[in-house]
Image (cartoon, rainbow, N blue to C red):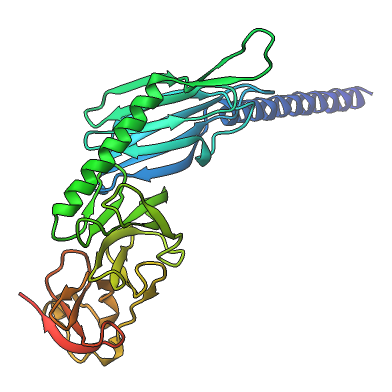
Length: 357
């Protein structure tokens, strides 16, 4: 009988220990789930989009922090400005977007010489301007672009433009005028460092520009516009000059009203493609070089172990009286390369040896 009692006591003790352990495990799981949920909803950082400066030295990162506050609350976000691998500025913000999450559509980025400007937009707020200076300082302010005034006994709505938007429009127009004047004086293409637009003028009246319409992760999508009145007005003539390819414009040049060449480099600047137009930029075709005919590589190829496949950066062409010459290198800025020549306006190309220091 005593043995039976001892057995029952031991058995009950084990059951009690099991129940306590089970309850402890359930509590631990609930605690872990609670901490995880709290982290995801309040602290987890997710990169939504990035934008790179035209010179490639700076990167701006748009982050969402946690989830929007339930049910229709604001969403927490952060802007992080990087210079190479170092963080130089940061700005936290709240986006009131009717309970919606932060997306790449909520920001507009404009790069300037010493700072980057961001306009944040949400459905339940005035636009907010955030300026992150390259010296690490940050300026933030709301931008109430419009105000609604209702007249007595009148159901119509009048929108009055605020001085801030007038100043911004005037500033943008002034910048365009300055860029046009600079391009007219230049012997080659020029770039607007604030937004990446590339200009080329054939003469005082006729010009073209590649305008950035979308950008992410160091690459850009462009449209081509043309002016015939010295830059007073611009006509969009090509919605996709680079055949749906993203990158960084390498250059654009025209020899007359119809014949021109534009280049697009990859975000890493280690490869590029050239495109040719014979209708003033309304259509472009990719230049294909006969790389299979190459019989010699620069001497540096042996030193670095390069093969002909490594030569994939097509530099903007040199223009002769009746010829076009393209040097193909392994990277932007290289001086050792493979030379191709065209004597029929870019229709055909022939291998013409190598150039090296």
